[in-house]
Length: 603
Image (tube, rainbow, N blue to C red):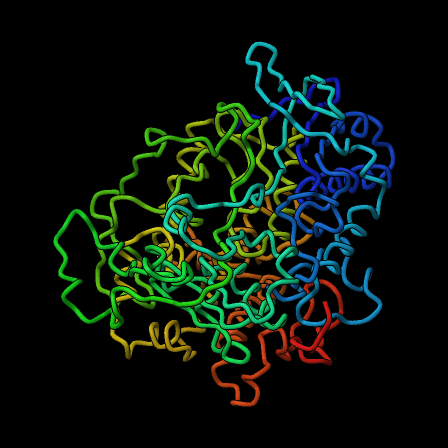
């Protein structure tokens, strides 16, 4: 390990973007400065804090958490005005500025977007005006790394005038929701559609035209879940959601209010039906897409997919693409852009000879499943460049380049704040950076560890996913996932899923010297006879980590358990109406249920 040298002159840092990532970095810097000042006698350390310039193309901070009305943008990927978060309120609480510090009264189980934004803004400005370091209305035109000068060359544009400046380090904090993913293959198949086609980011302009309209949503993740509820609230007609797989947030919903939503799993758009009114959509099944190409399969002869191979939905007025986003890194040169790739960039990766997965709760039912030759990323099948990053943040080829965005868990704000502390330590020269070879080897070992975890492998290995989907219908997994019948086994499965997330964050929190921890000290757990080390999933979480796991589990169960609601409740009940006794992570209070039905509340 080689310690990053500390220059006699302060390090200069360019931060691109002042959404949550950029704000959290500036806040972590302000907190570090305040701690040094409070300690006293730290003049030398204070003088060596980095000099930061943050560039934000919008007129104010907050990123996508601002609505279009907040940002006054003509077009944007910002959240719509009435959005509510889909994770329990306690999961957006921070240890250095708790809900007790901010809210006068207990909060409801799920917060409104504007409540979260107000909380974030108050937190990041508690020590100083961090925005004095931000150049608003300033777009970054290009960033390159000069190997001779060992500097980042950043070209910005303010009011039509371009300026060039050099920096020692650079942090891209532009956010993963940089530009809508308008899937070309889908758009081509919908070229003859006679209704409106919009991306989920355009919800603000849809609100006034939704009443009574039949809607198709393409994609089954959280944006589809949220917009289906919001459109129902606004009085839409029937909503159909097509998903390419059986997963996704919409598949967990036990029931939808007013029975207004139909989820079409394993379906993708095939065409607009000919000789129709241009509003009948034809779908084909995707059930057999994951069949392996390197060995014979007779899956098409079985009855595991018991629906027609094609389907039609008539009289669709609006199609909403809930197809996600791409990060906007177009202005980064290829050498410092982890999201630029080609087929030759994709790493070849092999399991060690004779590798077998460690025993787990599905081992008996599945037997040995031969791994796929090609592993998938968590986001989708495309190459996302994560293997180019150390600790999901530092570019391995140039650790002075940092990518500050959420990547590894379903707790994006918490994750961003932890990564911001990694960036601060790196900017201050406090991190010990391993050699490039060591970082690559650590990534390889991380993949091996993932392949030993049921939930991680499920998202990486198509053959393993296929084997799980093909379990008998009376097995607890399909009973839980397809038929919404929770059990002790399914609860344990979900608990382990979130334990994996918590332990991932716990490791990074330790390196980041974050002001909180999710894990018990490893010294509290003795290594058993015959063990070389403690397996990742055998590590123990502390009380805060246990709360995070529980709250994520309850968040899932709240959706699934809607299936058990009475007929009368199913007319109005959503997961946001649940009465969950969830404790806040750091403040001494519980969340409280809504006093009014969510469908009846004004946003």
